[in-house]
Image (cartoon, rainbow, N blue to C red; front, side, top):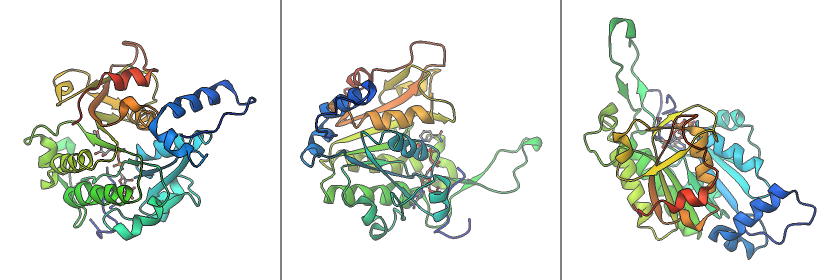
Length: 296
Ligand SMILES: NC(=O)c1ccc[n+]([C@@H]2O[C@H](COP(=O)([O-])OP(=O)(O)OC[C@H]3O[C@@H](n4cnc5c(N)ncnc54)[C@H](OP(=O)(O)O)[C@@H]3O)[C@@H](O)[C@H]2O)c1
């Protein structure tokens, strides 16, 4: 790994809608008005400003795109680490550059937001020289300064503290299934204990007093979203089943839907999906969040 700064990377409040608004816009506004987030922003008479961090990442960039596509509902912002990532997602003045390990560098991105979606994560890099044709197993490492302790714990904590200090109305945090098992193979990866540090940040958020939604995703897949029935669970029970993966696009949609329903607040859940073609693609997110009763 090069430098610490360059580490990682392998891995609503609406006034009444105008009569001319198309049905889907009116419906979206109704949905947002029901949520606490919308109510809080309603005081100012404008749409809530939502920041997604890790906006250059594989799930984060889908969230950023969805926020931008729903400009009638949200004012979307992104936080990335580099100019390169900003260019990659076609970001303008609404994409900030900062490093979550340095609170000062993220202050301007956080200022004035109503909700925060955290999609930053330490990502292990593969050691060079791995040859699968020789039956070798890949080995992984984290760059100096970019271990899960620094990114998934300190970095997430910095974001939660900053957002709480300005009175943010909701924080959505994407984590990972597997955190109930200290011996989970992901903890061994690069000696990073990644699930342990992620879990610590999740606990910090749950204890913060800020309305939160913790989404512990199953194995992420780069597939189209909206095509599968989503499954929620708790305590890694889903990991004992055959359906433990989910499309990044579906995780991104759940992050945004979580902002629209009171039923998503103060909850933590595992998230996966049935295979495409099995079950009914999830459209009713209120019903999905209502299935969740666990606060952590
Ligand atoms: N991979 C899986 O199968 C899996 C399964 C379950 C859950 N998850 C979790 O789901 C979440 C999303 O995963 P993903 O694969 O979509 O993420 P990803 O592509 O690895 O993106 C992570 C993002 O975090 C950013 N980041 C890292 N360190 C940072 C720092 N110090 N300051 C600011 N930004 C920083 C990275 O920025 P750069 O672009 O600049 O590197 C990157 O954009 C993660 O929490 C992941 O652990 C993953």
